[in-house]
Amino acid sequence: MSLGEAVSWLSLAVFEPGLYFLFERWGERRAYMAVAMTIVGLLGLASQLPRYGSTAVAIFVVGILGAGLATVVRKYLALRQRPALTEATVAQIKMVGKLESLGGRADWLAENLEEVWHQFTSEHLPMPNPIGMRSVPDAIEKAADKALFRFRVHFQGYLGSMKSAYPECDSQLMIDGFPHEGENYLSVKRKIEAHSRLLNQRAASMMTAISADKS
Image (cartoon, rainbow, N blue to C red; front, side, top):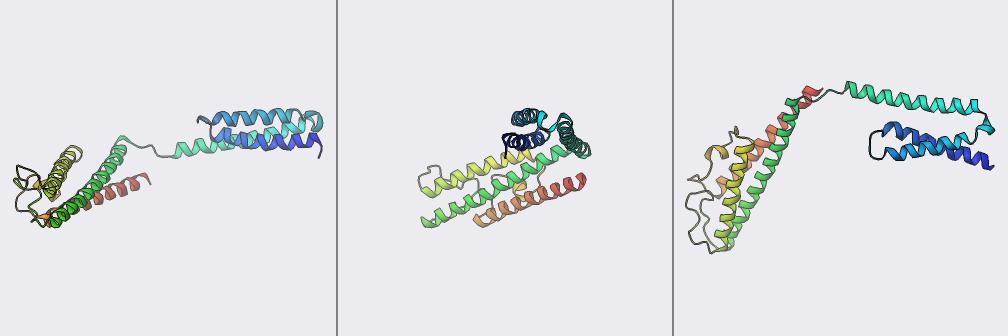
């Protein structure tokens, strides 16, 4: 292979992908790389004008540019056909994220409560109502009482987050609030788990409705 042929093939190898990425990535941070590749390829092709003739090279370049223009038109039409998200839809998507996040925090609360129960069991102590008014002694000295106190702090913080992010929630957990008498470890844990399931179900229902509206 002569030097001229090598330059021609190398120019094509650089010019074609450079032009492709120029059209595909225009406006992005790495578009300058596509511009550089395209320029290098054009310079290489220009150097071969005496070898192949200006007409042949021009036809080739026009063909490649035509293909690139077709790519641009295709992307433009795809953007025009894509349905725009309304403010209401954006708000619904954000709400789905909030519900899923709150559901995950509720799952963590249930797990934390189970750890507190294990702590009471390991110390051979009866576990009081986790969310009762006077379930924690004034002098918090035992490890189990300290663990329960921390759970109650997390529990009250979670209820505050729920009231702020989803005040209309009608789960039994939110209806009963804090403090709430007549509970025990299992009843509170089951109530937290039911609350989490409710949030995840509502998030899934909202996401289904959003997908149906977009289709």
